[in-house]
Amino acid sequence: MLSIHDQGTKLCDGFTRREALRIGGIGLGGLSLSSLLRNRALASPATTSELPGFGKAKSVIVFGLVGGIPQHETWDPKPDAPEEVRGEFGTTSTKTPGLRVGELMPKTAQLTDKIAVLRALVTNDNSHSSSGYQMLTGIEHNPLNRESALPGPPNDHPSLAAVVRALREDRGLPSSIVLPEHIWNDGNIPWPGQDAGFLGRAHDPWLIKCYPNENRFDVPGMTLPEELTQLRVNNRQSLLSQINKVQNRLADANAVQNFSLHSQKAYNLLGSGTARDAFDLSKESEQTRERYGEGRFAQSCLLARRLVQADVSLVQINWTRIADERKLENQGGWDTHAKHNKSLKEHLMPSMDQTFSALVEDLDQRGMLDETLVIMFTEFGHTPKFNARAGRDHWGKVFSIAMAGGGVRGGAVYGESDKHAAFPVEGAVRPRDFLATVYHLLGYPPHTEVYDPVNRPTQISRGEVIHQIL
Image (cartoon, rainbow, N blue to C red; front, side, top):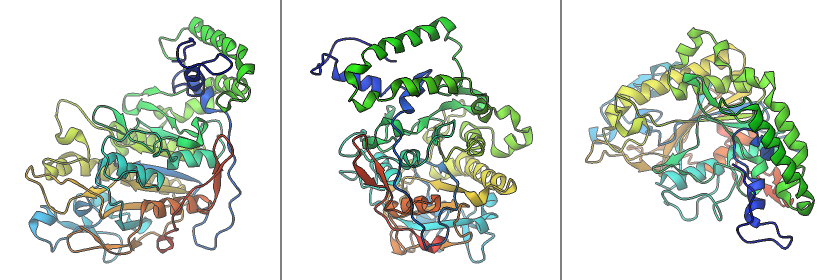
């Protein structure tokens, strides 16, 4: 909530530095969309690439299985390894000759002709926060293996979603949206690397905290909350007028440039029927909603497809923990330190398999898959051996992710791990290479530049495009 007061260190003009930062960083509720609609930075023009797939993806959907995808039970099973490594589950054949995946993903297995698998991704980091930062930004966290790391310098590089928002102009809705909540460690500690960092708040992806399975949304600027009366709206407008009175005193401060212009745009979006329609899942058939699954994450994936149809360039869906009467192990998440097999069999894998296959099939049937890149994303894998609690722990030495549509070559498998899926043998790639490939598919070479609030250029990627999967 924005507040005006005189406490804190004052700038030379008498306005507090804290208040200047607050004006530039209004939260994501109510009419605060104005803070996200100013100072659009234009990227350097992308040049034509000679590699296949360049610019094929009109949009990206990040299917975020945060907590760690277990490589042994998904894309890189080791059926000939000892039981303490391979686990209790077998494998299943796929649509791709010679490729077998974990037996708990039968629906996805029949879609591998549309999927490329990276089997040797490496972060060398075993902490959610810091390995996640590297996967989201392409930059190693300083230091590595730092759990519950906080956002901020020196780990202040922009996320994939933020870079896309800097590259792509908003078309009614913001060009990057994150659902249904931010990524956090215990204690609600947010991972670093989820926002625009040093690129400036204007490029933050739009975070929509929602429960689409219950038709509950906290959509910034789309509707008036029930408790927000017209009188309170008028009062907020009055508050904006008060802010405008001091605007001239901060004319050179990047945090408030064009504030009035973008405040008006926020009010206009408030009544946008097109924007509201994108979030209206009642327009989907019951059959479609059931195909995706009934949970919060599943229905967020269906919402992601609708947002892509509404010209949103990137939608990231973060897996959410689940607290309900079933008392699922590991909070219903992929961080399976205890009872790994039980969690996979009873909840995680059936839910993932149903929703991921539904998303890919839905896009394909609508003729959207060729221009929509879908990424099965995670921050690391799991240990080759089980621990004393029948769980698998964190493992960033080698793990797998998958990509479908949007210019990737279906049926491709790149990279190989050793006989225990513990270390890469060949084709190792780093997060910076994975992100360089995503930008390539969107039509931006790695050397493309975006600009921070003082117009300093930053190259969007330090990696190399993985041409083997294009």
